[in-house]
Image (cartoon, rainbow, N blue to C red; front, side, top):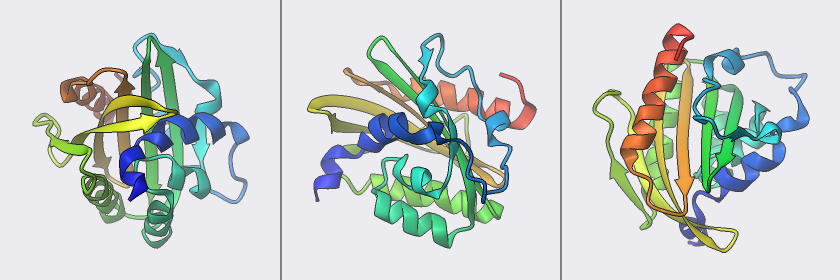
Length: 194
């Protein structure tokens, strides 16, 4: 399947195109704007057009899971809204995505479903983060706008929220770099600091 060769294209391009449309007036606020850390870019420039609320349409396209599959999952698992933050600089793209669900079990299911789906690609490999129990980490190689990109991603949940932290570059990104970002995001989600 063609999507397997371009799994991270959503992370690098769709997110960059659409989050600035403002909140969806039909969607209740999720609080993810406060629970999603604003410092994960480590000095890289924030991409203003890619930071903001993610209604269903944008959330379905924002991860490495094919949009149609993710849309079906979100609509059947109590998705209530999302939020995105993106930073770019020095040939590195960092994304932090938050997905708010009706129940804890839906956020947990999102983590498993997303990682399992991406790992069906022959371009993806499993990684690990022993400091964040229950997380799912992986690395993948993609073609984005004609260039080979290397990405590491970590999925994890905190109560009714699921988080996706991704770092992409022109060179292999060690999973430990994304694990450090995911651990900072966990701290922020739990305490509001970090």
